[in-house]
Structure formats: C-alpha cells, structure tokens
Length: 219
Ligand SMILES: Cc1cc2nc3c(=O)[nH]c(=O)nc-3n(C[C@H](O)[C@H](O)[C@H](O)COP(=O)(O)O)c2cc1C
Image 1: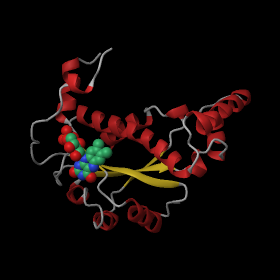
Image 2: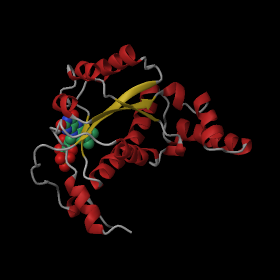
Image 3: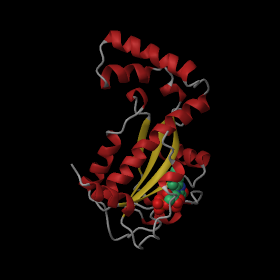
Image 4: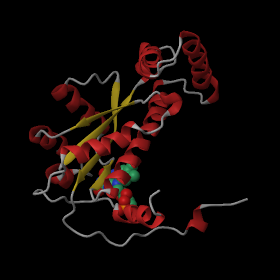
C-alpha cells in the first residue's frame, strides 16, 4: 500500500498549471501510464463513453487557441494536450449497435446476459435517470468522462507531472475544428473538456479550500 501522506502530497502537488516548461517533454511511457489510469476508470454499465485525442500538431493547437480562452498558454506550452470526446446519443442510446457490440466484443458477455443487461440499460435510461433527449444523454455521458480526467490528473501528479483541466473554450467552434481538421464525426462525438499535461514553470499559490466540515455532513 502507498502511504497516505504520499498520496495527499500528490493531491497538493496537483494544481491547475497555467504555464508549462517547453523544454520538458513527457516520456511515452509516462504518458502511457497516465492513459492507463483513464482506461481503468469506472463508467456507468462499464460502457466507457469516451475517446481521447492527443493534440500534438502545432497548427491544430494554434487553431484551437483562437477561441479557447482558458487554454491559450497551455496550448502553446503543454507537452501533451488532450481533448476528451464524449459519445453522443447514436452511440449511447440503449439500443445502439455500439452498446450491443461493446457488450459482446469488449465485455465478452454471453448472449443471454447481453439481452438482460440491455433491458436494464433501457429501463435505466427511460425511467430511472430519464435520459430521454439527446442533450440529457450527452450530459450524462460527459459526467462519466470527468472520472478519467480526475484519475489522469492525480496519477500524473503522483509521478511529478503537472496538468490543467480546461473548459474555457467554445464547444461548438472546437467541435467544428475537430470535424474539419481531423474528420471527427460530430454527430457521434462532442468535446466535453480539454486537459493539458507537462511540467510547471512557476510554483503555484498555496491551496485554498473550505474545511471538510463545511461541505460534509455525517448523520
Ligand atoms: C472542469 C474544470 C474546468 C476548468 N477550466 C479551466 C480553464 O479553462 N482554464 C484554467 O486555467 N483552469 C481551469 N480549471 C482550473 C480551476 O480553475 C482550478 O482547478 C481551481 O481554481 C482550483 O485550483 P487548483 O486546481 O490549482 O487546486 C478548470 C477546472 C475544472 C475542474
């Protein structure tokens, strides 16, 4: 087991890094490690409603920068810049081909379980969580995409790598850029967030947070 103090130190080390050292690159094996913690993240029914695009192309970064007000210095300086694509309605709906193939090919479920799990997923979407329109389903899938985000940032911090989560961009314009430049099918995927990784230039301000007793109630 890892000592609690070491784990907490990684949480303190992690901060929203504004500027990265352009001389320092994350190694392939460290990046692979970070992505593995995304891979191992939990998701509802285990359907992994995400895809990550690692944007290393300078031209594409420049294009994104024009409207990504929360990412400008990060797009210029991050060693690795990741965009999280969330699966949309045609992929995530209970009766989609993606879901059926996923249960068969990835989860390796037998046919009778595929049928019963599929039915449960249908009830969940229709009545339990009322995921009845495209926007609701996208937001539900996007919520899950933030779990790998947290895991990637924490695992990066554990090996001394800095990060910054980013929502400071225009979703529609960014989606259009990915469609035009990378051929991403935006009827199937939409950007939920971006996240930059690299090595800090400046030390962060000390953390400010509420006390635990101010946001947790034990009853
Ligand atoms: C979902 C989300 C979106 C964020 N978007 C941005 C952003 O666009 N640009 C930025 O510099 N920081 C962004 N942040 C960083 C937050 O401002 C930061 O996490 C918060 O102020 C707490 O500071 P700390 O992370 O350094 O502890 C974002 C954080 C989250 C969780």
